[in-house]
Image (cartoon, rainbow, N blue to C red; front, top):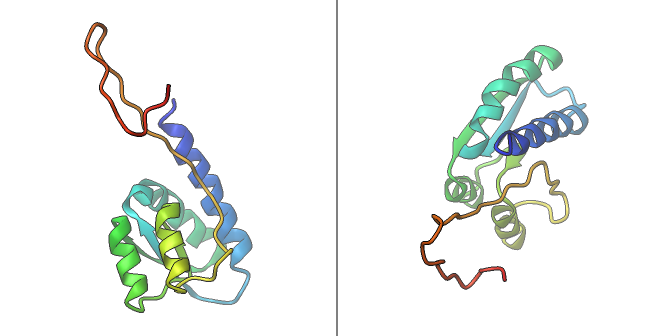
Length: 126
């Protein structure tokens, strides 16, 4: 159930972003997206195209790949990547600062078998 929450949040955010953000008459929208969003893109892309008449041209790549594409002058109408990548692009003036919208959040955890020693981490919570 927890794994579905980020995908559901991303789905809602993606629909909102595209529906509200593109009222122009563009026939083709370029989406640069992190690979983690591939299931959302495959599910919602065709639905968006049918509902709006706009065609999505989606480029999927790891975070570093999308950042590199944009830094090298590649353009997209929408960039969907983790906040760290957006911050890099804002710092390099490749995207307009302050225009990012959070569409999903995710977290990571580690569990240890009962009785095993607890690993240490510099990011460890008490």
